[in-house]
Image 1: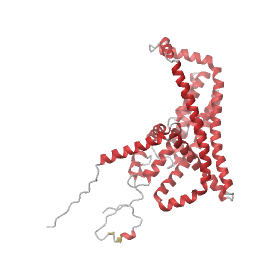
Image 2: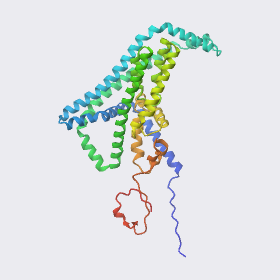
Image 3: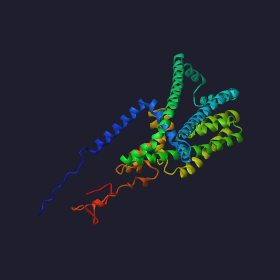
Image 4: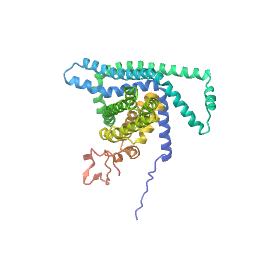
Length: 385
């Protein structure tokens, strides 16, 4: 009777060890990124802006426009987007500061109502004053120092952004050559980056378009309700639209408070209803149908992405949360047959967990599969014996 030899195919390292090593490496990478957030944040934002705007340069070159002029148009477009963003933000803050003093009497009425409500729960006004007195000059000084530091950081980020935009614009001449080189020597990475570029470009376009639609709906509703600063709240709604999950709440609270001060609780309630319905119908039902595969993650993963990248990259991380997750998903998961199973847990379409690129086959001792020699199986990436 022939002896059957048993080969031990157990992995060299236990599965739990591999998992722990992977998690440790991920934490180390994220910690390292957080240490260079002042550089990585502007770099990633600039990259996203160029990904979204680069088709303009391609279109101009194809129309016969000199490449140098097309580069100038690209840079001007990117700067125009940033200028409009910062101008809208500054104008909104200025308009709000000028408008709020008009509602001081209503504020004190609201304050008295809140104090009365708290007293019904056993919290007296004296206890509130005691808490306010606990704010000492040293804490106020610390708060002021923190605010000045934040302003300095914003100015630094803007300067770094401007420099990076110019530098990246100069590099656009070599994009096509680098693209061909990457495709030739690392086709899988090229496919991953190509998918990311397509997805993130669609994400910015669709998110901007539907954010604009929601903002217009909000402005019209606020104007009809007589809520002051309707245009300011529309701009706020559009800007916070880029922050996944919690952006809607950030854009909802200020106009609700203004409606409460100006017109009373009924108007404030109507504002909440209008915002909620518009957000649910447009951004939760209609927008995903246009996004397609651009944002192919579940709502929970999108929220966790917001928490993760905000802690790693700060405020810019909140803006870049989904693009960063899309990049990690495209490079590490979507084009790796051994990792695509992760999509079963993070993707809104579990079918993407099936390794489309891999065909598993059985091979006999002569290296023949279904009567064909292995030399004919160039398209088979995964093979089991």
